[in-house]
Image 1: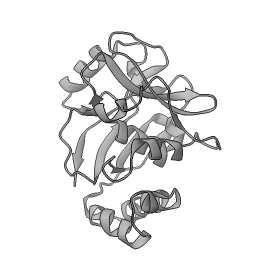
Image 2: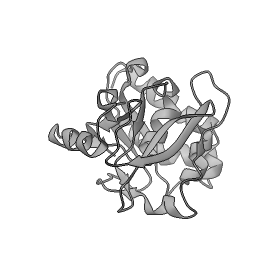
Image 3: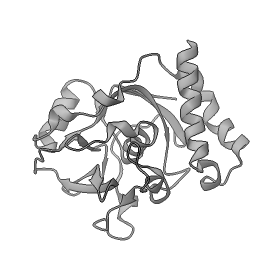
Image 4: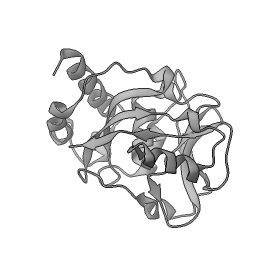
Length: 209
């Protein structure tokens, strides 16, 4: 592993520590670092290009460790101050029903590799976009993975280049998505058959623990 990869992994860990993840997980800083530290050896090299919406790996902490209702408010836009939020269109308790439809390598924390924001799918019906992604042997992001992308690389979330996270579904026609509202990141949803010119579909190459 190169020093650049190690430095990027450590930056992402420190980012979560700075945003209060240890306390939210019911751990002290040492305990939190012990939870995610073993993943360092699995990190992959590559130069992040958040402006282009591509990063080589993300450290993802699941809702089992910190609830979505707590992680989303710890996102901001690049150079922004307003906290992200969960849209009121999620009825009480519905976030728990938006479960991962993909296989996760670990229940608590893992790495997501070869991540793309997916703006090529802006204006494409989400169902059609996810079919294309599957045909490329890639995977749509879960809600937690989308939050991790904005948390570690807020530059990725920009006007007209927001993204759906179709790896979390609840069995109906809703597809979760993260976009900009009121000058802050917002977790909402759109219909699986409705295209939006400003909303693509994020995807990744693999997951690992």
